[in-house]
Image (cartoon, rainbow, N blue to C red; front, side):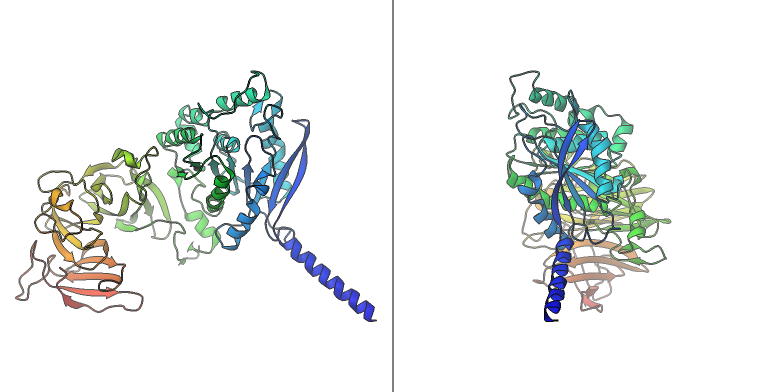
Amino acid sequence: MKRMGILIALSICYLSLQAQVNDQSRVITDTIYSKVLKTKRAYTVYLPKGFEQNKEKRYPVLYLLHGMWEKNDVWANRGHVKDVMDGLTASGEVSEMIIVTPDAGGGDPNVFQNGYFDMPGWKYETFFFTEFLPSIEKRYRAIGDKWHRAIAGLSMGGGGAASYGQRHSDMFCAVYAMSALMDIPQEGAARFDDPNGKLAVLTRSVIEKSCVKYITASNEERKTELRSVAWFVDCGDDDFLLDRNIEFYRAMRGANIPCQFRVRDGGHTWEYWHSALYTCLPFVSRQYNSSSFVKSQSEYSMLDEQRQNGYWGDQGDGTYRNPIIAADFSDPDPIRVGNDYYMVTSTFETSPGVTVLHSKDLVNWKIIGGVFEELDRIDPAFSAKYMKRYNGGVYAPAIRYHNGLFYVYVNLYTDGMFYATAKDPAGKWTVHTLKDKYGNPLRMEGWTDPCPFWDKDGKAYLVSSNPGKNWFGYLFEMTPDGSQLLDADVEHMKQRGIVYEYPLGGTLYSRNSSTEGNKIYYRNGYYYIIHIEFLDGGNGAGTYVYRSKNLYGIKENGMPGKPGDMRTYEMKRFDLRNTGTYRQEIPG
């Protein structure tokens, strides 16, 4: 009887351990016979935790391509994709997915055929799309549509991923290309002696399928299809393929196809590609879980996914749950015009500069355009060639509607004060440099977070602040058309760490130590100037609201303040613990 009890206990332990093993993620290698290639081809697949437990669950899939000289198991063995994926899944940074690496090589390209394209004696692309992909997605329960399928790769595989994304844009929602062989480089490429050898055939196929030339040769209809894919290019600053990746990015920008581009420290090495997984996997996961690229940018809407997921945004039953947009739209500034809402957000050093969104209900938003088509037209330092404006550029823009025109005011932190106008916020914006009292362009460093205001008498004003030693807020007068600051001198405002003086630097309205997010409104007989202080070193972090029946405050004798002489306002401070009460204060 005791023996029977022991056997039962051991059986239970074994089954428990077996269940735990089956519940873990794993990497397996298998083969598929190809009628096209007339041989077996190997592949390696990452299966997420619980894959064997829940036989009904279906998954997104990422095809992760290897480079020349390598095989299907290299991402598992040298890229450590399982460890990276397990960690990112556990932290919630990525959703569960299947990751598949096919074998498109096998070693020395002079001896073994390499490459992802169709070429004499090697119809690999035909094999991939007609045999491999359908077989994999059936066997491993992939969801099997464009919106849950992505492709990535390194070097030869990076070029293959980009080319597949271009010529099969109906199949993939995202492409992540690392150190990609977009075309044959002038220096550093593998050389061949036999013009009819396998390496020569591969080289010609890459030239024929040049990712750069594909874009420049695309018509507008094809470009629209390419915009339905989320693009990301990642290449090291010491990589011999960097110039080709820059050429690709320039071509994408020239064709107005959104594409993220990163140049990091590193070369054509596994250290670089392993680290790239920490960006690649969250990037493709976001595409699976967002409708950001479900439609072309001109049809962009977050509505569908919000109503589908039930976790955030529109719940589909007349309610919503924050966040209304589960993405990084920094410093939002919304307005209402008629029955429509419009909003602009920060974009920092990236182009298009200043994102413009539209909504009918303040919950479901759609990107309708950008204000600056290319920030490098302001200064070449924003370009992919120089990339010297990281953490600079667009900070906290403001949008307003006045006399039939939409206005966006934005200070490029590194480059000065600008405004843009448009009759249709979804159309082309005309960008202008704001000018000082003498008509000089306000091109200087440091000023941020502007907001315009047109009073009922037609006069115009602007609030802005200058980070640094004296991070204070200032109120400026403008010409009625909003093109010029009447109490500003660019030479005075170029100085840093000073208290700016009227009439060369506006009227000081806030001495809080980190004044930003400036806004100005008129409601029910009161002028409101609002800003935040995010550092605790001054009067305390929080939102500060100043109000008065006169824009420049009221003197003790009841007379109004004036430019250069800011008088008493009622001030209220809000923070997480304090709803605030109004008290009398002279802001300046």
